[in-house]
Image 1 (cartoon, rainbow, N blue to C red):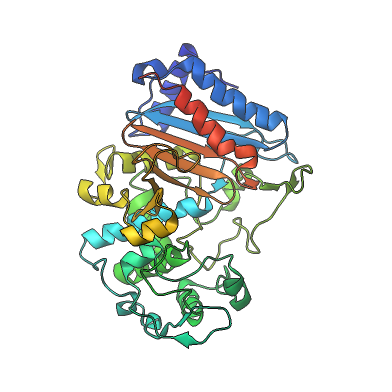
Image 2: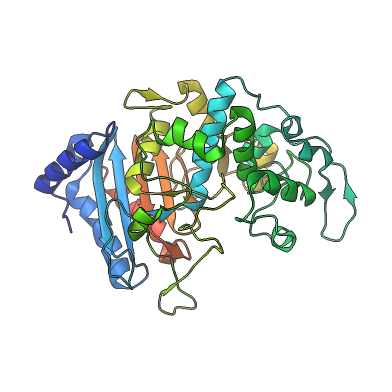
Length: 407
């Protein structure tokens, strides 16, 4: 294991310069961080491994556009004893949403649609959606149509893939393609009128189908050609091919304080190519890959000379987009951006997102990213664990990183 010291940081700088175009590296002190204090972040991760709360993790920190910390600890698998590495592959689940949002907004900039357009203009299945205010109540027409902006802001009235309603109606099925998914989700009633409430939902997978309609390309092809390949995210995909499966981290679950045990979340695992390309939860990635994506957002749409979005669009995506009544309904502290990210409105509102204007999101199998424009930092932590943040790991790791900031 590397210790965070000047010599190790120099070696890391050379390795990253060769592997990660567009992401130069630096020693912590060169960007206003303490190498000694960063050791506390590593010690925290190692303690969680030693206590068998997680099998392992990979974490990274970038500041002022330079990588100062990239640390694998523990094992990919207790069974194989394969160690974590910088190229270990993680199911990032809902962190996929931010990638999908970038694809959508690239097409918006290309003039393929407007945010105020109704979804039904492009997906006719949405013309017949109904609202059911209570589980046993009558169905009715919605007060207005679902817009593209609603799908991005989770104000569409659609529900979450794990909701009792969607499970009962089998809305989410990884063995069917996106067109059939749209048919299934529009057969289920909306939970409320569009625009009236923030409800975290499957709207982002609907957006993946819209990307296909607007671009004329399969969703995965568009994402690969227009986002992943230009950013050098060569390890990010919608499934893990056989040659890379030795790098896929095992998901572990602990229940009632018992030992960690392997846990397969999906009926169609990520080692098989799914028919459903899920814009909400479908990607597998590495910490270095997602670090490049995050730095592109922090750079307002550009990385290493590659521009995916205009600066203004990138800024809009990472600001709160919820109208005041919906923001207050959500609690007033955390907004939501068109980039499918949580946005801090009130300080210290959400564990690992703590500063006004900071934004990011997480995944249900143990990953998170946090971007702070004011501090010019990106923090990423990836594990594969259910629950996703045992013993507040995310919050504790982020706090340790913040303690390393010295200016």
